[in-house]
Image (tube, rainbow, N blue to C red; front, side):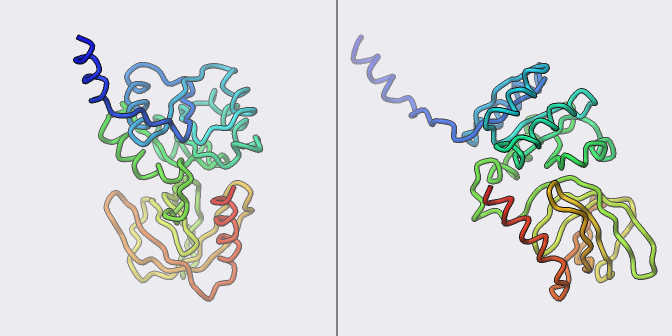
Length: 237
């Protein structure tokens, strides 16, 4: 009996200590279970937080990420996180809502959004795409997933509003209703947390499905240096 019990214990895989924590703020039901399991697969511990306590803990304790619902009640939580010295650059995930609704919280620079109902495969794909940022493995991660509003000016002076998907020192991927074509010259303007609004020239390099497109910054535009400095500081914090 003791031998069998010992054999069973020996067959169990060693428990890996979580290297990061994600706060699940007012996330309940099936969504909570799905997200907890998805983050666990990448060694991230999920801690459920509710109500005003969430804002208090995010202001005082260190978390690598948090998941909040895209509703008005979540603003104090995001505000507390971004004002906190230890969590000001944490990864913030939104739950529910469209990209347009997420723009209401653009000043908090939401990194990514889980759409409702939260399905395991879609959630796992999103966590996999962002987990290096959560786990601070920055040497292998040069693109920052972030959602913020961007003004895109065409060569003829037309102004288009788009939403970022990822930002790097060399360019960005965006989404909007306008059909951009590869080769188009543009100038983009945007702001990111502690980075005041900047303007950078570039050109459209690709157009994908779901109204997404990519812009490569003009290497001769010295204004992109400010973005590079911001990204370097973001990754080192």
